[in-house]
Length: 200
Image (cartoon, rainbow, N blue to C red; front, side, top):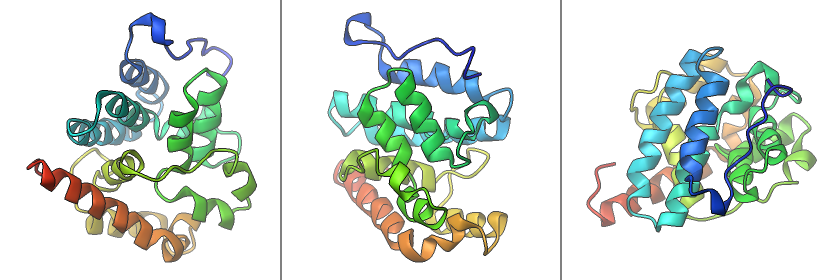
């Protein structure tokens, strides 16, 4: 797919919202090869759209685009380093996606702690890890959506992750470092939604 994929992200003059392009791109990359991952992605994007309603429009577009694109690095054609956050982010950067979206994809779900465990910390550090409500919301959307796209609690998601991956998996081992950070991002987003009376 890397060789055949020629579409680039829309520029400001194109009139197309980045999130619309992102949905189409994620579908093209994931839907056939990885249908379960595509179902998860659709659920994450739905959650992100709920949070996006309480954000400024430009921030909302960045959030929803990042949600659609967050797991494209799992596709075999994009798998270079074997680290989906970084593979996805690097692919997006190659195709003209705004650096901020690439960075959100690169760092989603506590990627920094996992990258350190697998020796990819310096590579990941090429992308800034922003702090704030958009990053929190992306993590929240991902960590309250199950593998098949269903809504789950944060605790249920972490239990599912541990059970599916096993204790020796770097993602599970990294929870000792990033588990509290993940929980804090979810909590802050739930608080943001509660201020606007949006159900979490």
